[in-house]
Length: 263
Image (cartoon, rainbow, N blue to C red):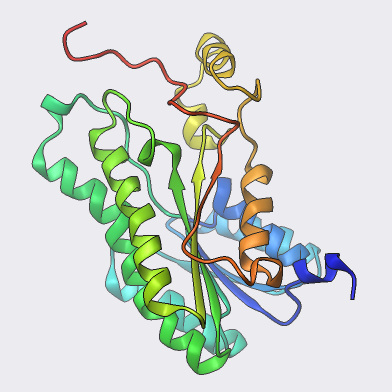
C-alpha cells in the first residue's frame, strides 16, 4: 500500500456545517476529491448548490440541506440526511461559527453568550447527534472542529470570539478523551485565511499589515485548511486524537492591530 492511500476516503461519508463557502466548502471538496460522498449544510441554498455541482463534477455524490446550526430541528435533519442518503456517517466537520471583534465594555452578556452558543454549543449538539450514528453505521469516526488562533493567542476586542474558540478547542480535548479509541476528535486552529468573511474587512493596507505580522509572509488560503482537514479525516491520522493543529502561518500573536480600551 502506498502512503498516499492512507489519505483516501473511498466509501466514506462526510457531513460539513457551513459548507456553502469558504473553509467548509473547501473541506467538502477536498473530501470528495479523496473519494467521499458529502452532505453539506448552510443557510444559503444557492451557495450550497454551487458547491454540490463542484463535488458532483469530481464524480462524487453530494446532498445539500438548509441548516441553521442554532436550530435543533435543522441539526437533526442534517445528520439524518446523511443516513437517509448514504446509510452512514464517518466524518463530521463543525465549521459553522464566527463573531466580530467588539470592545469588551460594549460586549453585552447576550453577545457573549451568543458567541458561545454559535461556536461551541452548536458543535457539541452536532457531535452528540453524529457520534451514535457513526458507531451504529461505521463503527468509528473522525470529528474535526474548526477553531481559531484567536482561541489561543489573546488580543484586544476578541473577548467573545476568543473565549468561544478557546472553549471549542478545550471541548475538542474533552471529547477526544471520552470517545477514544473509536471516535477521534481533533481541531484546526485557523489563522487569518482569505475567505468571504475576512474579505469584508480587508483593505490593501490592512492586508499588508496582516501579512507583515505573519511569519510565513502571506495570509492563509482555504486549501491550507482543507489539506489539514483531509489528514484529520483520513486513516493517515489514525493515531491522532485530542490535538489542536495550528494552521496559521507561524503566528504566536494575532496579526490584527486592534486598539486597547484606553489608547
